[in-house]
Length: 489
Image 1 (cartoon, rainbow, N blue to C red):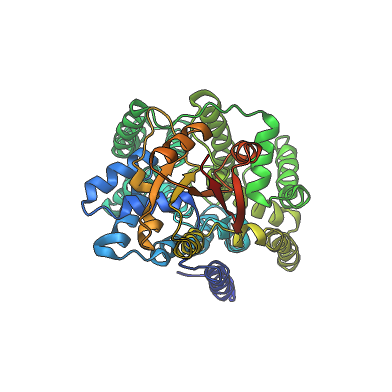
Image 2: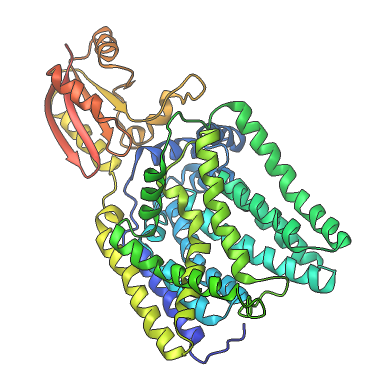
């Protein structure tokens, strides 16, 4: 890879190393949350297809994650740190990838700035540490757009695309779509670039054919998921909620979020001025087939619109971290806005460092979230030794927090991964309601229940009801894990 500036490769290398350090410093084999417990249960199935079907019930679009989890659980290799390393590695790779993509659109300056944002972003660090699809979604999104821009440049300029570039586009598109439904959303948005930017009918048809290799498998996956009726929620959000979601994904602090996106408003001002002088509009575009800023803006704005429509109309399940897919276009647009603020490289470096410090500050502020993860192993080990010390009473294990519906049922075994790992064989109950649980416990001849709740998944009303009925004898906390001893009455 050739570089325009002498020190670019060293700065990029430094950012990649820093990204690795920031992500690895909290990597542990500690069990983080209930969702990971379910993932490990699914991954420990001896038959790959059995494991895949279990994952499909939990997250139908998460095929890539299910494969990686099954591989790392294969033949008894139940070491959490290995699977988390996959997320961390993909999170680190995203740093040079966004540099490559931003350089394709603009220049090395924008690439370095965007790479710095990925390296220091608190959310990119946080989502690189769990067994989840977010880090994979970020990396595959960047890879796909690198393949897409390369493909569109080539086909519009030369009317021909080499076989390897066609394959690269198709594979990255499928990987992106099989990682998350929001990956499918990005593919759909990019498909409409064909209608906007390709004017020759022969080139248009060739491009559509290439996209069909991606869209047909992803369409079949979507059709299956919709007919399984396992991806819905009844929650409705308003405009304030969406603003809060975006604030969370950027800095999780309104003051810092506003400062960080200021360059986009300056960029908007610049382009509104250029509308009155069309000859100047788009002069900064490096992509051959059309204006870079227009392409990225469509990517960014359409992603948000598509996301809102999925939530409001389809009522798809949503977690705030899902919004990580909007970060690449957002960071590139911010980087471009910073460059437009000053035409002199020295000033661009100074301004970039200032905005980089804002990202670093947001990471420092959110260290409590990055480090404060539920510790199931610690909680379960505590229960194991506490039960040993009381041989006069019979204890059961009660776990709550996972969502249940008629069409979304996971076997009780899915909740026993860390219990079995610590050789705990007590009776297990899944929470339904307080009265029903107490009746079940009485029938089993239990005197007490160890109640395990995850702060991220447990409704506070359940805790309030347990207290109101005076069932809680004592309580303990392990970070986000709440443990109560409930007397069976």
